[in-house]
Image 1 (cartoon, rainbow, N blue to C red):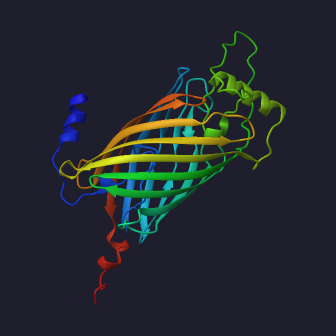
Image 2 (cartoon, helix red, strand yellow):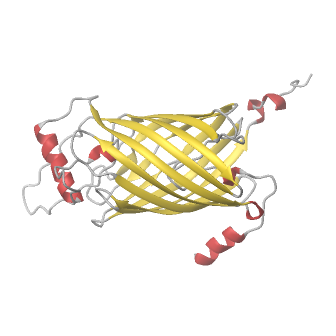
Image 3 (tube, helix red, strand yellow):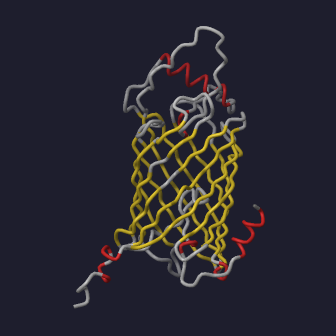
Length: 320
């Protein structure tokens, strides 16, 4: 395995291919750059998988396929549908959690004085057999600045989560019932804590949520929580190897009516052009401070292509 990864990283250059140079949230780091998908290009994220290993021994895996289209100059749109695999004992144990659409608009290229700026908006609705956080609204401002072979990125985001309809209660066990495993939260504001002086354990936090939900259930559509994100990243490209290395650090501050510690996460990863149409990305991260410390590992591929009928210059008679 180590040898295969090394061969991929050391493979020769691919002429005129620059998709490896693009950073998207989660592929492989949490911070993204200010540049959209090229106009009329279609990018398909094939089986990108993120695995989270929590400090209490629970593991959660998320498959996040997505399709992005460069619909207009400086503008792309994206549709996505995450698929989750939860720990043993959770019901449902797997299924689609959301269906969402996002759009990014780039205001300018870099100049001598200014970085490139972009804004991104996203909305995701509960869908499939394993909905989690209800409706999500997110906005993000992005800046990218180049310094020689390095680029620096800054992201500032704000998201709002809304309560999903409560799932039906499980069938009660009456005899020889094993204790259920503590559930793993599926969304950032799904955990609260009554410990103003410091973070609670995951089990304590889940107990708080369970007790609060049993006494004061939230009506459908009530805001469940908001998240403020601030993150920065540095990447280094190696054009002769069609390779990009990136590292980031971002914080997420929660506001859901109860005290909750801020999450601090750091990632490192790479993007490698392995063929004219395919990019491989992989990374590892650590949520090292917050309510639920965890290790994160991600790997995926992106396939880029175009459809002649969608490109005005390629249509018959376009130059007549």
